[in-house]
Image (cartoon, rainbow, N blue to C red; front, side, top):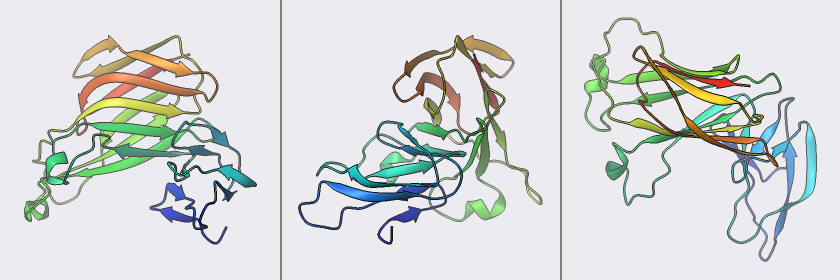
Length: 205
């Protein structure tokens, strides 16, 4: 337990620190579930596993139930090369089916963010819908049009839906999705909406 640590408020890392070890002990704190980032498997809390598989090509990382973590999945040589890359939203539902997270976007250099040239968004899963809205701001007017798009949504802890739709800019359309029954992982493909826009993805059960 003393070797695991949090990367931010939502990701827990359990490194392998013993040479030749192929498993680690993991303690899942709190009262909400945790999800294996690699495959979406769910683990209840509080609980402890004495021998979680950790082969040489995997560092165990878990996402807290109730969180949404934006990720850029394309491997680049520098953060500059990633500036306009699309995002994947990794959604980990809590025991009530709720999750939330935020994303700050700006040009990545300079000081124009001090004059309001940035986007600050909140994403929320509630009532079977994933929504995107700007975080309320005081004292400035948003001027930054972030180029990043949403290319994928991964929802952990979700049953198989009948359909998935997206509403954006007054239009509604169906989205493609796949579901992994073994881990209740729902993958929604190609929403193709701006990360800094208002939209809703409706999951129809």
